[in-house]
Every structure is written in structure tokens, then in C-alpha cells.
Length: 147
Image 1 (tube, rainbow, N blue to C red):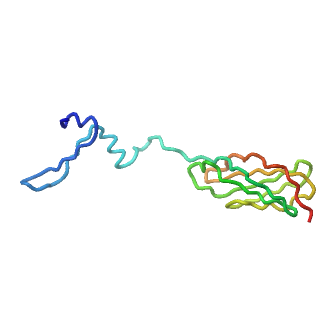
Image 2 (cartoon, rainbow, N blue to C red):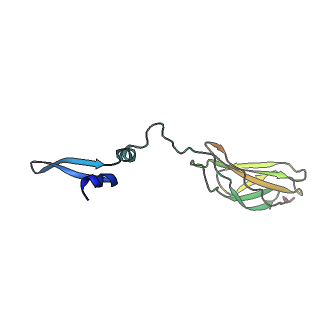
Image 3 (cartoon, rainbow, N blue to C red):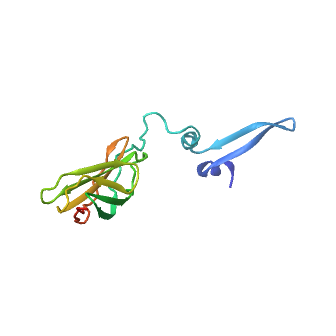
């Protein structure tokens, strides 16, 4: 393969010589733009991947406690390209109990001040610097303990 054929397929580097000593490298490239982007990054205005809100966490367990619940969950499959800053669990009653919520950095979250003997379900949402992500699927029904 000669140099012209090689230009179509890649980069050729040759040492430049002057009087028997090397004084630099000469680079041949059939795709100068590809080389430039690889070396200095994409040009201004080029499409960049944009960060988004995170996906939905997955609730793995709910454990009823006295006037509350412990909600365990897995992080979402996608953080939206940014670190997740917090999670929020919200528990709502299906039959007239008080709504409770708790924000925290990791699983599990303990939600307090729920009404004993009322049925509840919880959801969890992840937050990053772009905003709130999708809600998890609702948890199984549970009843907080009276004492």
C-alpha cells in the first residue's frame, strides 16, 4: 500500500529529518476533521448530549412501623447524566389517613406521622440538578402500626 492509498484509511506519521537528525513529525491524515475533533473536542455549536431528569426508582420493600413506614428502593437505571442529589418518598392513604413524606440522600427513607389503622401506598422520586424524575410504581398496600 502506498502513501496515497493509506491516506484514505488512516494516519501516517513520518519523522522529518534534516542532516540525519529528526526535527519533527509530519502527520498525514485523510480525515483531518476527525483528527481535529479527537484532539481538541467538538466544534462550538455541535450537538452535545444534554442532561435530563433521572428515571424512576424501584421500590424494593415497605416495612410498616409505629405511625410510619420504612421505604427501601433501588436507584433509577438512568441518573439523567447528572448525580442524583436526593430522593423523596410520599405516602398517601387510600382511606383517609394523613399524607406523609420524607426527603433523603439514600435508601431506605423513613416516613413518619402516618395515621395508624389506615391503608397506605408510597411512591419515590429521584432529583438531580435538572429537576424531579419520574415517579416509581406505587408500593404494596400497608397499614402503619398503632404501637
